[in-house]
Image 1 (cartoon, chains in turn orange, brown):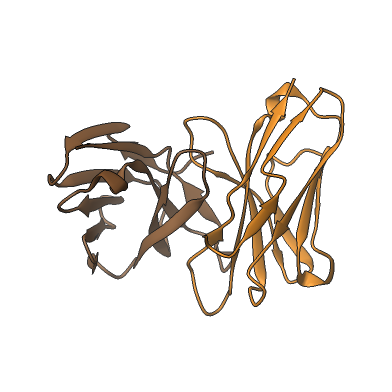
Image 2: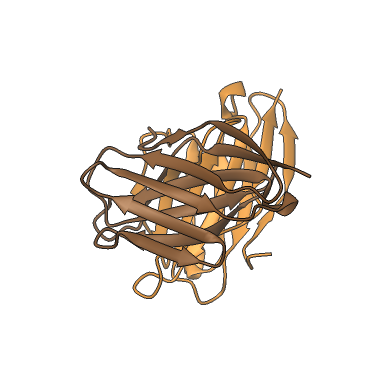
Length: 114
Length: 112
């Protein structure tokens, strides 16, 4: 257990539905990252926050995706109008920027869109 | 897109043997990290090597970095069944964002 938690661990949804995932980072960490991982591949960067500010979004993050980190604590990732291509593992990671380069990953949320 | 290419994609060895995995990348980096992922789980950080370092050790792990060849290797000595997992190299080439770009991983199986 790295100290980063994600909820839910698994989500099955029908195409066209909206889903929201939550990540609770290690409390003193000021940076939070979202990655997406498909089967047999390494994680791909989606977006990251410094405290509550979203500083960068990948081109992978279409306008159906939105992420927030209110008050610089937990973060949510919402996918609207899900498509089958959104099926993947969504990973959250946190770190204390300026102190450490190591990222602590949560267990992930596995999304299956049917 | 993925920066790294890992070799081999899969490796199966006997318990007690050494395992070597290689990673190549494309751009200049600040540091390179290795992570382990057990099936269906999150990633666990193993070791970090900075761009000005050539070799680093941590327990049974040895990492080398050759920036002229843009490559790294991870050696696990005296392998154990519990080392069975996928291993990923990740590079940080960003300007302060500490944004990691992962390879596609090596699936390591240790046979008892």
